[in-house]
Image 1 (cartoon, rainbow, N blue to C red):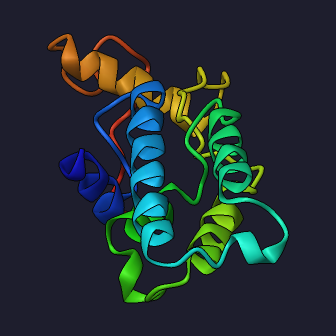
Image 2: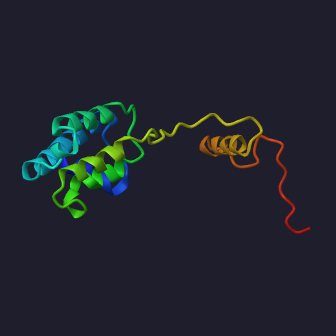
Image 3: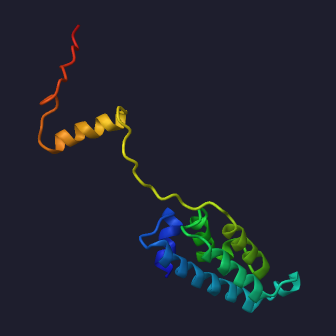
Length: 149
């Protein structure tokens, strides 16, 4: 579990699918919050019970179809929460909630087909010729460039 979170904390990416990573993050949220709550029950004094806030955090995490754009910071916080939040359960849970109340997710890159006549289409056409073994300028109406004159 720690290796997976460490990977995301360093790079912002994971080799695991979001559906699997989400479970790892959820388990770590439960672990971190339980550790803080065992030593300081200050969350109950703030008007909501520890269990209510924990359930809200888990529900927020579950709503994401893809990783939130804050996933790297979320993993950093879960791996080393005491660096910033020494003992306060309320503060660490509030920080987690802020990281989970974003609406943007990490975009999934998908290549769109090139538009006809675009530079991308021309480059892909030339690349295709090279990959097939055809030499540049072969089989087409391309003329050599006049570089001397």
